[in-house]
Amino acid sequence: MTGQIPPHVSVKLAWEIVRNLALLTAGSVMCALGVNGILMPREFVSGGITGAALVVYYLTEMMPVGVLYFLLNIPLFVLGWKFVGRRFFIYSLIGMIIFSAAIEWIHLSMPVQDNLLGALLAGILIGVGSGIILRSSGSAGGTDILSVILMKKYSIRLGSTILIFNGTILLVAAIFFSLESALYTLIYLYVSSNIVNVVVTGLSQRKAVMIISQAWRSISTAIMAEMNRGVTVIPARGGYTGAPGEVLYTVITFRELSVLKRLITRFDPDAFFVVTDTLEVMGRRIGNQPHW
Image (cartoon, rainbow, N blue to C red; front, top):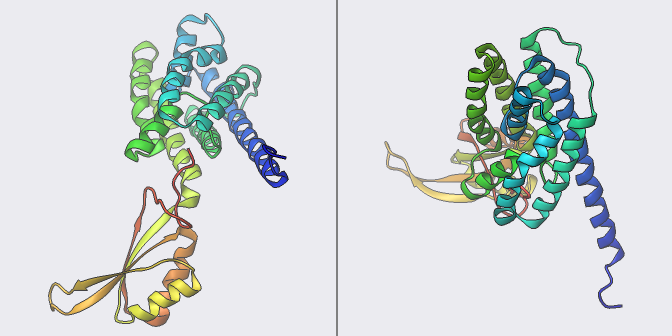
């Protein structure tokens, strides 16, 4: 029959939907625990749209935080419809609804009395929660949409965008509440932004490696055969001696780094090699470009 979806495709599609909904729900629950269990009892603010909703709530108490979060997201979703993919937009819309509901319904007090420890715990909870949400094919709305747009267009890290954007919220908190509250919020935001980077890209971090060795041919062959990674051979010349040589360039995963080190020293214990972090890698097999 024409137009009928093959069974294996429908199963894969169903699994993708369940996976994304599970990630959006789990992340939203963790964020709600941090907001309702730590931030609100101490009158700390947050970043982005959540922070804006908390500020409006503290000043007016005219409506619940979850409702304010939903309303403040509308302009960003108009922007998201234009600049991000339709799948990301739809899942983000679902994520925003789930996140708003979690903020409204999940209330669990955290047994932490010290404000500093509370800020650290909030950063961990909300950072992990936000990272889990961004591991899905969507987001929970808010500045996540803005962060994804900037990462796609300018390769700016998610956590960096969030941290910079939140400076305005901190200034508002210092003016309308107290400097102490703003400083505790700064600690929480710093922790959460770094946790987001770790959860979203840390586990799939790629390393770029440049290798200079007389045994370059054997090393190159071993990398391709044993690690199943591509290698580029770059002609080079020594700056001091002027002697010609070759430089190997390869990109590997973080978990493969120790394997590569052992492989290099096996052929040439005196080899010179440089390992650098990558922000984003695009390409078949080794690429870690975000799925948004």
